[in-house]
Every structure is written in structure tokens, then in C-alpha cells.
Length: 189
Ligand code: HEM
Image 1 (cartoon, rainbow, N blue to C red):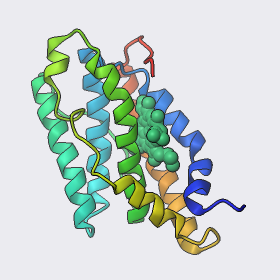
Image 2 (image 1 turned 135 degrees about the vertical axis):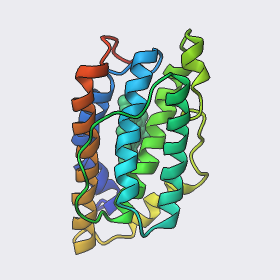
Image 3 (image 1 turned 90 degrees about the horizontal axis):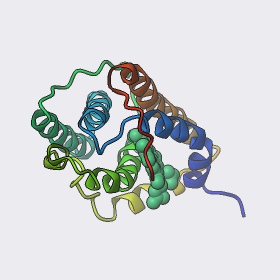
């Protein structure tokens, strides 16, 4: 049976995801330095994504919640957002945006276990971002919306392009931050 667009998109961007995962894995969220770097990168990228979602209230609200939580965590860690990032200079399809937002929540569930295993009380006190639960049913909803997009359509091409752009945003931001924050520890998943 032919794959639907939700699965085509996953296959197409698997390598992009792996690259982001690898770049972020240098930031051990169980340590203060690693958690600070990890949160700072997310703050920078989510802020760019929020700017690019200015006509979608639901996306904006979700991104604002994550950004506010990261702000609170960085304050607890004695840090401020300082990460440089690239701008998103073109409109981004809201479904590509939702795919990345909800996908990052899936990744955070995995990383949250590493964060929760920390023996550093300062790390554990910065709990706003990792205690955020994904909106119930939202991931399923995004998958269903993607599956309904005809794979050969212009919309599908736009979503594929914009998903790759958003993964690149995270990759370049993480690579740029690596020299400032990277810790030698590699995450166990
Ligand atoms: C070290 C960092 C990360 C790890 C360990 C990680 C891990 C994971 C895991 C385990 C899944 C599959 C979850 C499941 O199927 O239940 C997943 C899915 C996903 N992640 Fe990540 N992730 C990371 C960072 C990110 C970031 C920063 C983004 C984008 C902002 C992202 C976007 C996605 C997307 C879009 C999916 C859904 C793939 C699909 O099924 O179509 N991830 N991630």
C-alpha cells in the first residue's frame, strides 16, 4: 500500500531529525551547563517560530507557553536567553510548524527522563519546561491532518520544504551554541 503523506514526511526528514538529535545530544540535560545550553537553543528557535506563526493563534499560544517556561527555567539556572540563531525569512506552513512543535514534545518526553535522573538539585528545580505535558490528542490530530494532504500536491511540497527549514533552524542554532555550552557527556536515551 502506498504511504500517506504523514509517513512520507517522516521518511523524508528522518536524516534531518537525526542530525538535530545528534547536535543536541552534546547538551546533557542532567547537568546545569547542558540544561542551560539545551534550553537556550530551544528558546531561540521557538522564538523564531513564534514570529513566523503570527497569523495562527493556537500555534502562538503553544509556543508562548514553552518560551515562558524556558524563561523561568533559565532564570532559576541563573542564565538569560543569549543564543544566536538564524531568522525565518519566509512564511512557514502552519502544519509544518505544528509537526515540529508536537514532535519536539515527543523528544522532550524521552529527554525528560534523563533530566529527572539528575542528582543536581538546581537542575531539578528548573522544572517548568520538562513538566509540560503534550496537549492530549494533538499529536494524533497533526498526524491525521498530514495524512489527509495529497502526497503529490503543492501543499505537500510546501510542508516538506518548511519542515526541512525548521529542522535546519534547530541544527544551525545547536551547532552554533555547541562551542559555548557543549559538555562531553553523550545522552543515554
Ligand atoms: C536530543 C533531542 C531529541 C531527541 C532525543 C528526540 C527523540 C525523538 C523520539 C524518540 C521521537 C519518536 C517518539 C515517538 O514516536 O513516540 C521523536 C519524534 C519526533 N521529533 Fe524528536 N527528538 C529530539 C529533538 C527534536 C527536536 C528539537 C525536534 C524539532 C523541533 C524534533 C522533532 C521531532 C518530530 C517532528 C518527531 C516526529 C517524527 C514522526 O513520527 O513523524 N525532535 N523525537
